[in-house]
Length: 66
Figure 1 (cartoon, rainbow, N blue to C red):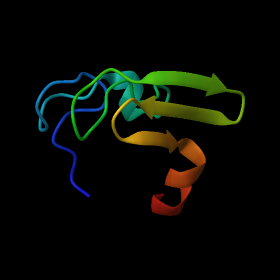
Figure 2: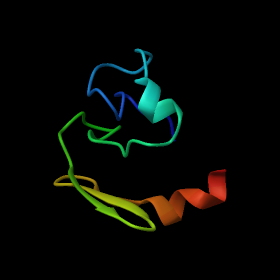
Figure 3: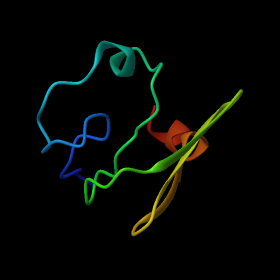
Figure 4: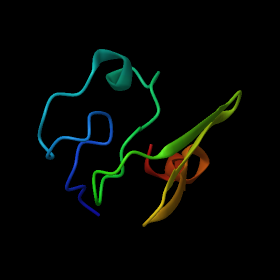
């Protein structure tokens, strides 16, 4: 799945990524599908982010892509 929006800034895909996000220190704040701001919960073992339209993304789910 290719994101249409930058998940860290909410701008159109292809923009710059903040340094903290490149280091893996920042969870996504915007939905990659619609660009809406997500509700983010940071836990000691990762994070979860919920878009009102597209559901929940969890850092544990993304471990398979690393």
